[in-house]
Length: 450
Image 1: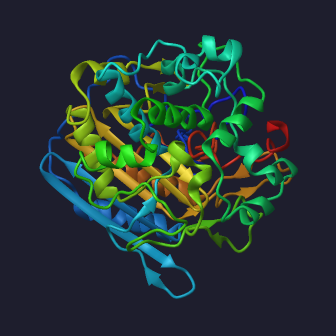
Image 2: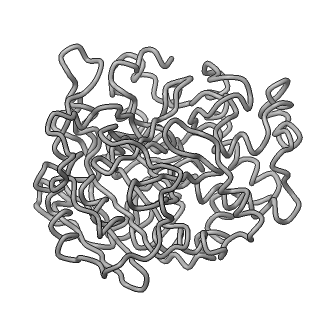
């Protein structure tokens, strides 16, 4: 999640594409600024000039584990060709390995699912994107805010509503992770999450600027319930997950993940030592902002189906991909666009929860895709004054795998003559704290986010 008034920054460069790793449910790839951003002339991502380099994908994924990540799994698609792999451990105590197809908490990637569900109601005439949210939920968002904040502002994070994470996990404001364990099995109503978010400091006037907030998507879920008369999780399951043909994706009803999955370890920059497993967790705190469980293959199928018009029509998809500037990338309605220099523009989202990080990116035509998950979060270590964290070789390894997957004809970062060994991997890095229902707060800012 992002600090009030600040959204996660996402800067893509060819050297460090994944700075997404220290995050929360959300939307922020954290990248360095070693190379300039893509120019307006960057070509659109589409099929490449050669087949998938499976050996390179296996090597770069194994390098993520070798760099210190417990376990990671990846699915890559290029046209009709597909590759999926896994490297490392699902359980560090028993030595059980991760395997392709393991289920995983995907955090803020859930926001794309929720946005699709709301846009389906827009197509049916039950919701108007530019109508005030107070027209639908006057008691939930009362007064001036309800009159000025539109549905569109919720979906593109320009509402100015703060995040609820510190309210839900109050110990974080005291630089303590105690509440992560104390609240492990607490069920919290979405209305309470909204109350906490509305009570948090506003991040700006409605429509003024982009600022990531999980509260926006909890409100979107309650809007969905109001206009459909159905539980949001049930509606999303039947009309988004099932309609996309996703066989291993669920909106969970219990604290447990059904099916094969890894443990999910949280370090919180060394405050939890050794890292603790958070794979069993009541995800009501994430709600429609970040509770979904999926697999890397299912995520690729989901975004491919969505971008090809299989879940919403052309007009709704055009609305979804109409973006606002978000500090280095462009954010639409539950989806963002990321320009990778010399490779193209990709659409998708990232996510993070306690113990699990995920990234899913797809070319606009759905031909080139990557979905990547990992099971150790906030593995970086705080610096001496506690205001930031030290770079980790895991970050560079993740970057290289992402580049190999999305840009198979591009030289790797380690081969690039422009790769400067003095460039800090953590330059300009921000937590993927946006949606993850923002569980990853940046070091040195926890107490200022109250």
